[in-house]
Amino acid sequence: MDDLTFRRAVLADPTTNAPEIVSAAQNNPELAKFWLTLKQQELALKDILSVPVPVDLADKLLWHTQAQEDKTEQSNTSLQHTSRSAPTIRNTGAEVSESSTKEKTGQPWYLAAAASIMLAVSVFMINTQSNDLNLYQDALAHIQHAAEHELADAGEVTLADINAKLASLHGVLNASVGKVLSVNFCSLDGVRSLHVMVGNKENPTSLFILPKNTTLDGVPTTASTAATIDFADAKVLVMGEVAETVQSLKAQVKAHLKFTIHD
Amino acid sequence: MHTKHTQYERLVRAFHADIYRYAVWLIKDPSIAEDVVQETFLRAWKSLDALQDEKAAKAWLITILRRENARRFERKQLDVVDIDDVATPDPNATSNAHAQHRELTAAIHQLEDEYKEPLILQSLFGYTGEEISDILDLNKNTVMTRLFRARNQLKNIMNPTDLQGQANG
Image (cartoon, rainbow over all chains, first blue to last red; front, top):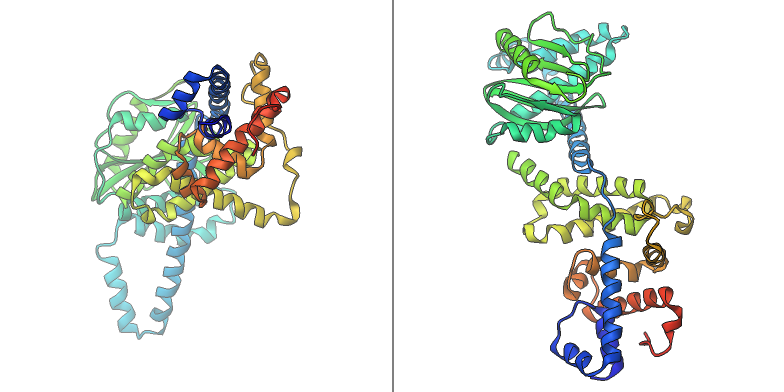
């Protein structure tokens, strides 16, 4: 092998183990030295190219995707509502009545809650608590999305899975709070939240773990199907269909969810 | 849907670091690189069904990243910043002890993208010439020539006195 071919080959791939390259280097100290220099440079190159990666980048990426997906889902849902309501207006009274009955029977609780909230929006929008209401509506949308798309095939979620995600919020759950169906980051009115669904697939209860500066004053907790917990380093919103389950989960979360700084 | 979420989360956790590193070297500005990585993974989520072979996932993500970066330039065509003016990330800035590393970092940034990309793919990810040719849509000989030229340029930048007797490209 001539020098030029050797140099071109090792410059193209210093880590090569091609027998003719090894043999040429063994027979020519100058080529061996050239190759060694390149190998050293390659190690330095590899080291330099491995720039540090932001520690929470993976969670950020997952959250960003979830937020974008939720946005798309919500705009699709409102488009569907618009297109569904149009023919209803043109229907006769009897048809409207039949259609309404169909929608009401077997309607999940979160849809009923969402409908009530929609009615209340116009009143609440005047108040300064409208942001809290947006957040609550987003929470309902997330619950609806998860119930329709994620829970059917949900596998087992372990305490370790939850704690892996809670770690980025400096939180830890030191005991089980029931069977966990899903745990995902999501965005509630632009606020990053960890959404944990607990219970059974037909009647799940949701936890949203939020930053401590989130205001939840406008969340309608009077119906007992929603509750809030104030930790020193976080806020938690609990939502479900059955008041007892919501209150029971609230008590368990209060007892077992800890934050590394204060609670 | 749950399967798709699981597959996607696995993809993000397995490849976000490599894709971010590739973006940083390609784009130079870490914050812009992070934005492009976000768009890359969002597009990957939307097209996840197109990923037939998980073994090809990294190469697939790199291809998406390169397209997203090209789109960024199309969008910002009238507002292009000279990349030489953008602050260069120096991964060893905290140590200040490795002058050679700093020189090598600067030397990498001096390379044209057509030389830098195959070099990163080979040195950082360990791709073979054939794999790089697939990712960059080039023939293998072109890839090997670019790799050879890239390292030759690095060597010449680092050791200008070694120019005599080196391979010509």
